[in-house]
Image (spheres, rainbow, N blue to C red):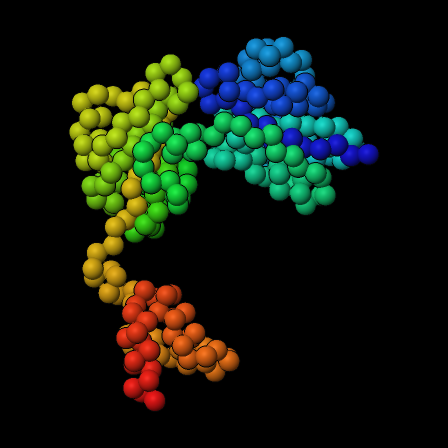
Length: 280
């Protein structure tokens, strides 16, 4: 009988956030795949868990992934952990889960801390709809392409950043995004947890004067469209009527087709209905 892969979230700072179920799972499995076995050892020792670890990180995931899957297929249970937070979320794990899924291995989530959700929940920024963008690349071409691609994203943007790269990232964001609201969340769940709500320009000034410390989650306000943007997004009347025609040809009543098209494009239902009737 084959085993299972358990994806176990670990604390992002405060060890008190490690759940009883996570402790039980790590105590039950046959071995643990850890991003850094030294970090894993500290966690295991804290909770008196005595299980063997194997190293599984970005640069050995291809050869280790299949090895882990073969052990699970042979009947062993494995838990994957990262240094902090939920595996596979900007951390190793995606490839291993993919390999296991492809080979019919059951993958079980043991949820827990996540820096993304933690930061959003205390940022005071709009978090009903957001885009998680992870880390920006250090490669200039990829970095600038990423910023340009997200420059007009209207949902709240969430990035991770290390302290030694923070200022450069903020300067690049100011160039591509303009001066927007931002919440800089650092040292989450730790003793010196801090949330700084400001603007990108003011954040640049702040961290030019004061070198940043700690790991950051950046919550950035989405793009606010201009009148020109909105005008460009709205099709002209002929295009709207053509969409109405496609719907009526498919069997919809004229009133229902007009209502659907008006809602889709944010235009006046009455004005569109009059245009359709006038044309007839």
